[in-house]
Amino acid sequence: MLKILVCISHVPDTTTKIQFEEDGSKLNKTGVTFIINPYCEYGLSKAIDLQEEGKKVAITALCVGGPEVEPTLRRALAIGADDAVRIHAEPMDAGFVARQIAKYCEGKEFDLVFTGKESIDFNGGMVPGMVAEHLGFSFVSYATHFEIASDEAESATVRREVDGGEELMELPLPAVVSCQKGIAEWRIPNMRGIMGARKKPLSVVSPVDADEKVKTVALSYPPAKGNTRYFQPAEAGQLVDALVAKGLI
Amino acid sequence: MSVLLFAESSSRTFKKPVLEAATFAYDLAQQLGASLEAVVVGEAEESAYAELGRHGVSVIHKVSGDEFVNAAYAAAIAKVADLVGAKAVVLAQSYLGRAVAPRVAVKLRAAALSGLVSVPDPARQFDASRLSYSGKGVEEVQVNADRMVITVKTNGYHVEEHPVSFEVKSVEAPSAGIDAIALELIKASEGISLTEAEVVVSAGRGMKGPENWSMIEELASLLGAATACSKPVSDMDWRPHHEHVGQTGIQISPTLYIAIGISGAIQHLAGVSSSKNIVVINKDPEAPFFKIADFGIVGDLFEVVPQLVESIKRVQAA
Ligand SMILES: Cc1cc2nc3c(=O)[nH]c(=O)nc-3n(C[C@H](O)[C@H](O)[C@H](O)COP(=O)(O)OP(=O)(O)OC[C@H]3O[C@@H](n4cnc5c(N)ncnc54)[C@H](O)[C@@H]3O)c2cc1C
Ligand SMILES: Nc1ncnc2c1ncn2[C@@H]1O[C@H](COP(=O)(O)O)[C@@H](O)[C@H]1O
Image 1: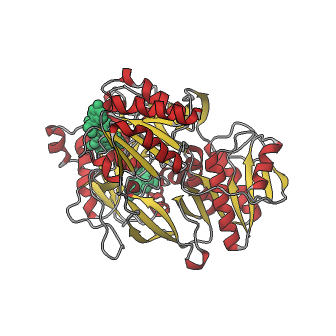
Image 2 (image 1 turned 60 degrees about the vertical axis):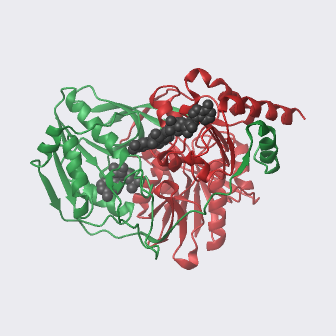
């Protein structure tokens, strides 16, 4: 039996026009739909793939967040997680979140922790490696392939992206795997999944004490672009001259 | 007090992201009145040490050994950080840097700051900025910890030389826990690494089919650029998936991004909007990409790109 924990972060939909509160303190959530972070969804899909290959797999979806993340966890259940856990805390910084996840794992004997390569809100990418370090698990980041021979295997074969290529690795379990495109295809929950999700267990767990070492003090927008300089199709040469003049080529 | 740079090595010279991290670390050390030291893991040549010296590193800690994977790198870096009482550990935001930094941060009980684009200001609780929301936002952070582990955004900081005299010290590799074992480097993609490239030529569904990519490759090779593509293009296997940029692909911030036959959907822009200069070639004047373009040509790419290639050849020949 493989016990898999899938860590899910709850993020604004990829089509969201990002707007902050006027004082720059936080995201303006008005009208924003939240989704499962797309990279976490690769991890979830991979866990379900393993189950569908006929392996004995138990999949727990976990999110550190307030009650507002529960629909996101329900969606994970609809896609195919067996149960869900919400750690009741505002996700402060990566260190805080990693500590919560690691603490939850203690004594539960997970074989695998699947995460996304990063959350598309703060794009930190720090949580997975921190969880691995806390738990003393092996770790592979930016995984594009994952194979395991059986549900009793002691290691998996993975491929990860590295500078200039991909690396084939042997990954002893237990392990943390941060997932990205290539590892699995996203799944669309079917009607049965959606109905079934209501009956699957979603438990709420209290957080442990941990400090916030990195504090977001302000959010603003990058300098506005615009003022496009247009050239006619026949003026490609002038575009090249403009690029040369700017030292770009 | 010191600032410790992880000088992720190639054996002879260091890649640009490492030199950006070095300049960043030097500037931070200056602000703190601290020394800049570096940790080099594995074998490196004299020329590599000299390059660190030129970038302001006064002490190089050489950790020998082979077969390093994430955990072993992290153990080595943390050991040296303790040895020199590092206030901050600075790494490039390369694949290796991203994999190792969180482990080091936990070992040192440090604040983990990823993808910084400005040096933390010691006078303001180490106030620093980074990009968030896939480049749609700028986040200002402050630190509430004695130590920091920082990754520096690739193409997010300049490179500057600050020559100093340096010494090299040897440190024994610490033992590290269990970790993944590298078996084989499968596919070293030829050409220039997308995440490190200064110029990127990218094309989308407007190309009609994979058979038309030779002009994109020619343009890229003339410019010394890496090639990239939109998601549908890699989904349809017109191009390899590691070229896919955007929200769900690779995020890049080159000096020049040339987008050809790409509409500029919000998810695509999320991966490229922090590029410093953007050229858009699209036959549709309403294509959303033009909204963030610095230079634009509204026209048929099958006419425009060959002309671009010819003009560049002319300029380069002159
Ligand atoms: C959750 C999610 C995540 C996503 N992540 C990403 C991502 O990471 N990266 C990404 O790229 N997309 C992503 N997408 C897809 C994205 O929404 C767009 O569908 C995609 O970027 C469109 O690709 P494209 O511009 O190549 O194709 P199209 O939108 O079809 O645009 C083709 C363009 O080519 C132009 N064109 C056609 N013929 C010519 C010609 N002869 N000369 C000049 N111009 C021509 C057209 O005017 C058009 O603007 C994601 C979508 C979702 C839902
Ligand atoms: N609040 C959270 N709850 C559960 N998992 C999280 C949370 N935040 C981050 N993660 C996991 O860590 C991965 C990387 O996130 P980050 O380090 O925040 O970029 C995500 O893809 C998730 O798998």
